[in-house]
Image 1 (tube, helix red, strand yellow):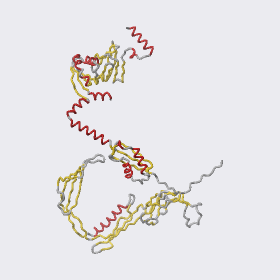
Image 2: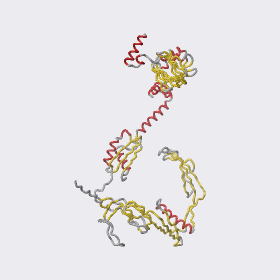
Image 3: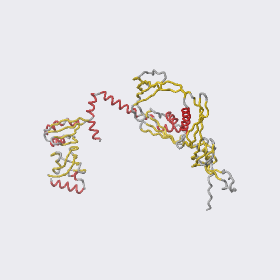
Image 4: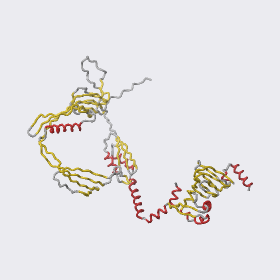
Length: 91
Length: 426
């Protein structure tokens, strides 16, 4: 599997293709500190008004802040709004 | 915007999820490809919006996550429709209202005409010709071909050079530009200023034209004050002996519409015979009232008799209407009529009263005839010059300083020849 991953990395790098298409990575768009778009997520681990933990292909994505609301959720995209303080990846 | 419209049309619910694990609830929703939006988390619950069609699939989700789901609000067209089905009169009223709005906004209700030019054209005539072509108050907007109406106006009315019609809402504005008359005989129109009443010239300030009078001149009504033409001596200023009159200037240099301020002292004198015995109406103090509610052409008497019981009376009317909107008023008003009984007495008047009546008449006349810049130099004075058995002959005089010039069209004058261009040698 690591070899396969490595091969994909190399092909993506060679052809200058975006990583989220080739490598099945998550894509995060942050608009100021008020709105966050996560594409290619795998589900919700934890959801409170101060902390949202999402499952992503890279592991876990922790978003901390205040009054965090999920604007919309669908199998491949999630929109989060509120006062975002930090974003952290973990295994 | 589109998402909100679709959500409204399909109907959606605001739900509250309590107990269990809300994260599990969300993941099960994702697994079943259901849609949730506007998700808010509180300490012990979660609120979200869900389309009506997805709500029925929430039962296994709730069971799987051990959550309880409660509906907070129902929104959208399906709920509105079911509510309206229970209230058909409301639905019918809304439909009638909508139909009325569509009908009312589909018509032209106001046709306004704006004429630009010498203003010889009557706007009502333009509106009448436009009505022939279909543009009239009350016509369907879709039934009026604006370009055809414009063409009809230009065809029927030779005075119009351009006609443009704009429709804004229910208002049509016809803008027409009138043709300007042109003289083809080579003569220019001449507007002189003449005196409109006799007087002594006190001040003359010419703006355009050649003044024919000076301060101190006595003029009669119709005398020329300012001539329209600027004239000069053909062949230059004549050489005459000092003290002798110069010959009049005859060649026209330029023709204009004469404009000037010409103020003159004007005397007014009026002889009046005031009867000594005069009848006058004196109020007796008795009064009756009638209140009438008017609706269009109909009137209902709310209080009082139809006619007062007095033989002679004076009537005072006060109308109280409801506030309208722009130039539209509610056709309902309350009219309060007060009848004051009067009796006729024939009494002699004093000399002072007779003088007051005589001066009052001249003062009234001056108030109507004098312009805003005019003034009364000597106040109205009265003198009793004749006295009969039943009348007093009174002469009333006054002097004013007033503008006496009025325009009058004169004979067209030949236009001066344009200056000839001198030939240039190469």
